[in-house]
Length: 92
Image (tube, rainbow, N blue to C red; front, side, top):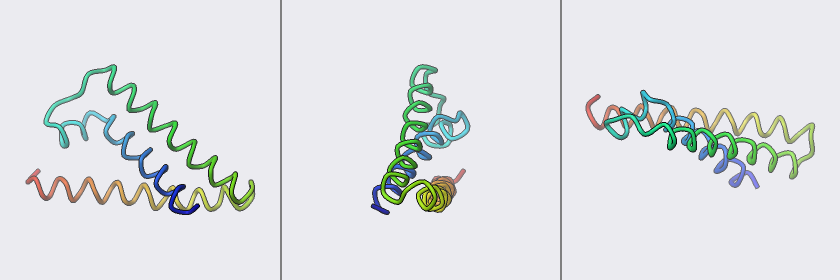
């Protein structure tokens, strides 16, 4: 269950990062259309909610929220490190 929660939260943060204009410039070299950006935001938010819901479903409200917040921190850190590595690799 830890892997599922982490994967959902990681996907959520990755989608939210891809919805930001600065990261779009870094990753794609141009801003994406507004409709696609809105879909990325929606998908990212949904993935974050699903990840936290999966944690609460597996461990209950008390432990699930704590576990979810821990996985949320790990996923956010992984996305930040991936973006830094991407920028260093591509000379930006």
